[in-house]
Image 1 (cartoon, rainbow, N blue to C red):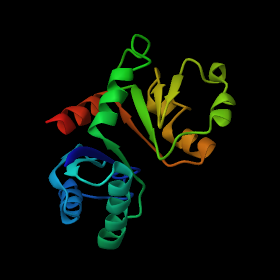
Image 2: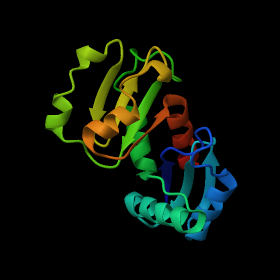
Image 3: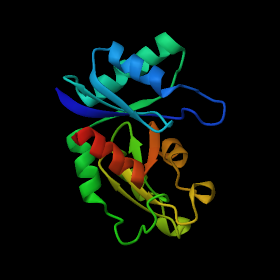
Image 4: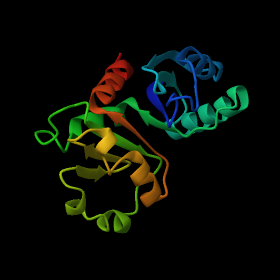
Length: 178
């Protein structure tokens, strides 16, 4: 079994899409996944599975909907993918506050033509770099002021997107590496 990470999109924001992490663990365990742990209240689960990450994410999404009536996006990454994401760190040295440096996880690889159409200069001082199914985003003025958020990318790319700050990404990798 391989360690994986499931990232729920848009849970526990104000009164929307509420889920207790104990309930999330129970749903994931109910699918037969082992060593389930959660991190924070933002819908992060780490577990062991023989399923591919995308297949596990689809099963978790379906189970959340059928068991809890919660219809949210779920994205999956393997421990190896998380390690590559952290190792790549293309904005190292530019993104100086890990709370304002995020990885936007996407449900698929973005269309290169659409990515080229995003004029980075229009969004300065924010920065971004896309690699595979992730966009690294630096929001120096914080998320509330950010324009290049996961919602921006979701609309622009037509993909499901969810973001985690750098501290959370590193913690998820550490948990998946245990």
